[in-house]
Amino acid sequence: MRDTFSEELTALAGSDPRIVLLMGDIGNHMFDRFKELYPTRFFNCGIAESNMISVAAGLAMSGFRPFVYTFSAFDVGRPFEQIRVDLAFQNLPVVIIGLGGGLTYSSLGPTHYICEDLAITRALPNMTVVCPADAVETRAAIRAALQREGPVYIRIGKKNEPVIHKTPPNFVIGKGIIIEEGTDICILGTGTILPNVIAAAHHLRESGFKPRVVSFHTIKPLDTILLEKVFSDYPLVVTVEEHSFIGGLGSAVAEWLSDQALPQRGHLMRIGIPDEFLHYAVKQKSALDAYNLSPDKLAEAIHVQYRKLF
Amino acid sequence: MTDSYGILDTQALDQLSRQIRAEIIETAHKTDAMHLGGCLSCVDILVTLYFDCMSVRPEEPAWPDRDRFILSKGHAALALYTVLAHRGFYPLEQVVTFNKEKSLFTEHPVWKNIPGVEATSGSLGHGLGIGSGMALAAKISKKPYRTFVLMSDGECEEGSVWEAALFAPTHHLGNLVAIIDYNKWQACGRSNEIMNLSPLKEKFSAFGWAAYEVDGHDIGAMITLFRSILTSPEQPVAIIAHTLKGKGVSFMEDDNNWHYRVPSVDDVRKAHQELGI
Image 1 (spheres, rainbow over the protein chains, first blue to last red):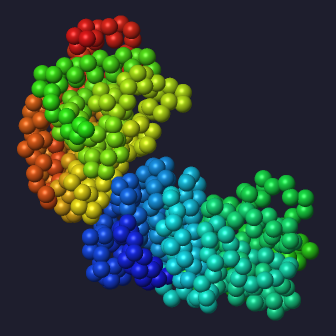
Image 2: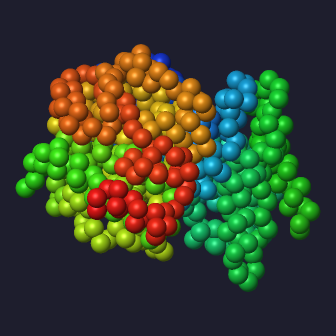
């Protein structure tokens, strides 16, 4: 996804002279092509994320469309107040690309992975929060973000994520994409966990279920039209995210649901990361497994919940 | 169309500063506003910038080639609002809504609320980064405008100031001017005792800035300095403006109680008397 980001932004910068790329000294050679083609619009801002966000604000206030790129843990985690005041309050069209949100970098330790980024960004007025599921959605999300007038946070993975979409889908910010149809369980997955969700759905099918899978790529604004429909149509709606239970997709859906007066509605089940830090060395795959986010564990958890309820 | 003003002599500018100080004190009294000391310390700097150095068009506040000014020490908003009114951005009568319910003249300035306000500020340590972005934008698009950022000395304790201080010379932002209103106080004490800022000029020099010191109440000296330094296309400029908190009123000068104290009717009367207004 990071290479896709670089490629797509380089392509877009050719036709849109407002695009400026700011990065926080990661991804050596990743932006060589961008630098070569647009040397006056590429800035390695160093290891100084707070300043990078403020510089992006100043550029946006002067008519540019800055993209800010570094690890999620650093470009959301470090400069929260600059994001809040300079970008969100002033409602500036700056796109923050968060590399490796979730457990992508769990092997690098607690400083480098972040499972709170969606909660942090979602809480800010004016902010749009998008978690593309694969490289195809990443490409579309970047293009869509460029059309927005306010700040956008896009959480991407790292590299070589499985491609879900064989052809480009109709990607609209705030509109979920149905990946597979089904009738008894609706699984809303966000971001790079989606391949596991699809694999889990296959397991569930083998057990006789007919799950629907949705790429719920936008955390904010919520696709409430879709939510209303699925909670009316499905007895069990499951949210799956590589993010804390606090403040992410499951939270957003639960908050929305608690305010609804739907006459009859399905149950909500949330699958995500518990409210804790990892204190030991762990690779993403085993961390996902430990948190019921591997395909087998996902399928099992959903299966058990369905049997409990019905 | 008036771009840069530059038609008043220093005597007239000194008189204007006194007038503005009197109005700030009166507004602070009427609106129960704090931060008076820090407003009074930067009046002469603001008057110098808006009435001599900066190219602005009050009748066209969004003129693309205008010089940008960011009041990074946003708590001095009342000083900026009053100066902008005198410069013709809006009638002075509007400033008396300062800090009142639903007024756009907020205690700390908000971008787009008020003509001439170039950035939201109040949380310290944001302005130099935003100003660097604006200066960078001018370089990319080959625009002639310059960006001025006014900070407080206490503000220089924010780490983000020094991130920007590293960034600007790296990217050769010769179109960026940082001014520090060095009044030697912050909310709870002497700035150099709370965090050892000294030597501030040398710090900026060491970071790659062309750094200068000036008496921040000597308008003539500031005009001379501003006119002489804005020539390097490559190196950002830092001006350490030595000032007095509460400048212009004997019982407010260098008395940090006026960081939060609101002037009484009697204080206003005495202050106006001293200022000759």
